Length: 205
Image (cartoon, rainbow, N blue to C red; front, side, top):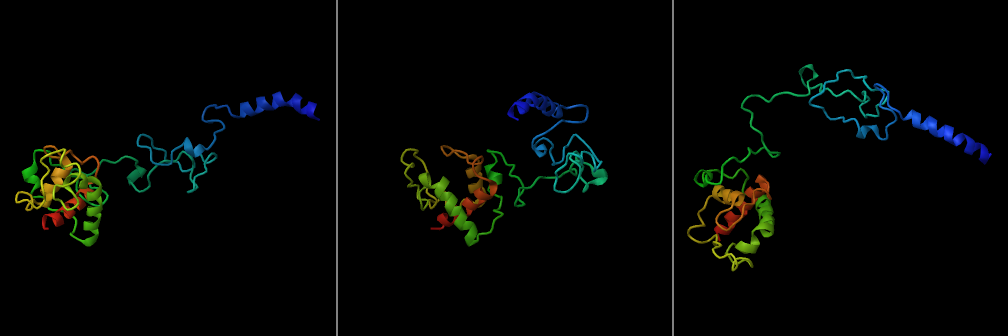
């Protein structure tokens, strides 16, 4: 019996390899086809036939594997131009911050979009301890462990600092100033505004 299996093994191998061959529209045997054929909308293709690739499909919506049109758009379009003048917002509905590093006077007029709630201030304090405490100190007195090395760290209660606006503080966190580095790439806009809210409480001490 074992000898017979050995005789048929080469033939079986040829049959199996032949079954994997791709011809024309047939991609051949594919392992995990959902990894090869993207279900998300393809911007440069437009297949409206809902049965296309049904023989291969294992999609949860029951449509063909190759169907990739967006039924929510006119003519099932995948690509649509945004309305003229459209401005992208962040996930929380904020407009993107567009003021440049030298626009600090304009930034001072920008109001904090987050409320001065206990939740916002508490989260701002948590972030402050992670990103600011080492220079500005736990109470904003410029007594953090790094402050003696980078001389010139201001106290938030100093006359020149205690009346700085939320927009000014946010802008400095975003772009940095003098020896302070920019944190715009490390913190989202929402997190920067939360820190600004917490800094406001330190200014009032």
